[in-house]
Image (cartoon, rainbow over all chains, first blue to last red; front, side, top):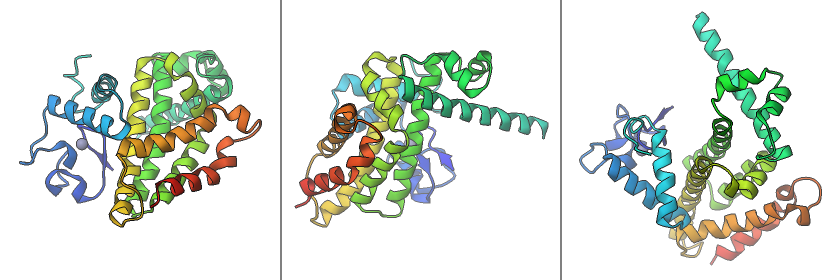
Amino acid sequence: MKQCIACGMPMKNPEDFAMGDSAKEYCRYCSRPDGTMQSYDEKLNSLTTFIIKTQGLEEKAANLAAKSMMTKLPAWKRQSPI
Amino acid sequence: MLKNKRQQQKNLTRKHLLEIAIKQFGETGILATRTADIAKHANVSHGTVFAHFSTQEDLLTAAVEEFGSQITQRLHELIDTNSSLSKILDAHITGLIEFEPFYTRLIIERRLLPANVTNTYVMIQSTISFHIGIAAQKELDQGIVRKLPVHLLYNTWIGLIHYYITNGDLFCSSGSVLKRYRHELLQHYIDLITI
Ligand SMILES: [Zn+2]
């Protein structure tokens, strides 16, 4: 199964992909409304928000976890600064 | 062909090492386990461990990731087939039971472990919470469950489970505390959130 290069989510069904296009390497959560992939900062922001929303953690801890996760993903491997 | 076979063997050894590591961490504690113990129990040389994981921290992080991917994969499949909230929660407990000794050490020792482990742990909890939230949202729309913020819906559930796990010696002096209390805890939680 394909995995989103930007967040690691497994993509099985067409609707999991950006714009429902299973040729894409990234998922619907990692795409902008026009179908292009979010930038590093946009993804870091949305992942941080995701962690806060799902666990209620404070922003600092959520941001660290999001950054750390992004270093492991193909889309961000080179640019993650930590 | 030969290269494929070698890669396959390498993957098998890695998987085996992770299994042994998860078992050892669970039995003797994460901080108290030495890579030499893991090598011994896996019947490989100490060097082999480091051929697969460059540091002890890498091995531990990979072990946590292995736990996380197994548990979240299961929840993901259940969401895909439209399972009820109670089914998802039950699968969460089943997944935890499979890793119970390791998970117990992980939540008890976590603050003493490397930051990377905490970050991985946080992502796993968020992924689990996300899946539980999806199932809860469906039942919220049907008027079955109360409207609660996703984080409190999850924290109430995981808080209950963690309380029993971290005090497992008091609730269940031998065997699995989750196996013993799973039905009571699940039923109680469902009663709490049901309208
Ligand atoms: Zn994605």
